[in-house]
Length: 323
Image 1 (cartoon, one colour):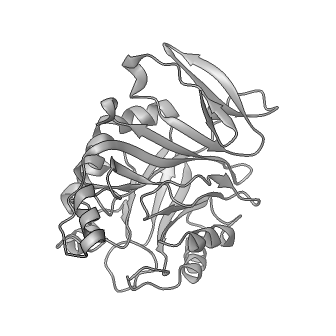
Image 2 (image 1 turned 135 degrees about the vertical axis):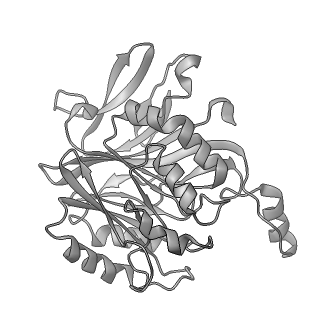
């Protein structure tokens, strides 16, 4: 029995099915718990108190946003688990941040193609967008990949993606934060206003990723967009936060959805060279680590009739055997 944020999550499952079941940390209005059983798997599932039906049975868009995919370990666990995870959670659309897939920094055309074949519907990028040579020439070949919207207009690549989810058009775009971030970018607050205006009439709803260092900047953007976006989800720090919530006007929010990659690490990198750098300040090569690989992301359940998020949950899936 796992107590999390006022909920008790119980996963009495067999070893055969253990690796396929995610831990789910939830939030939402009047959230309750309902015990259900499917085959040999028992688990607690969220429902809305008084509604008389399980939360996951409603026919509304369910969105999984996966945090920064780090190197080969992050790519491999998605190949191993994502299609099964989509089925288990009954996800309609999967979006992922892919800016760290190439040895921890940047992305290539070949890797973008491979990731989109794992069950990901769209890829977003962050401040490492141009780290890999040649990607600036390849990005326009991928209509479901977008670079941050508040980069200079002269940069290649699309500033948003529109996905058709069972006839529901979901627009997705990313803005870079500017606090403690070195990349040249326009004000994210002014940019989201421009983007929302641009997307009027093109999409039924908009999901915004804020790729930023400062928690204050992310939280402020969440409040700024409350009632105007399906969700505002943070990335970049690689550390999942315990603040999944639905804001008063219906926008889902999470300060950081975490990383998809090795957690026996320092933000996805081998521990020893990072420690050494902190201690003596000498330059070191930070290789991608390999231990305790997980998928981390946010699951957003959106009610297209009420035009508000019903819940936001942290989703964590660990590789079988803890590798």
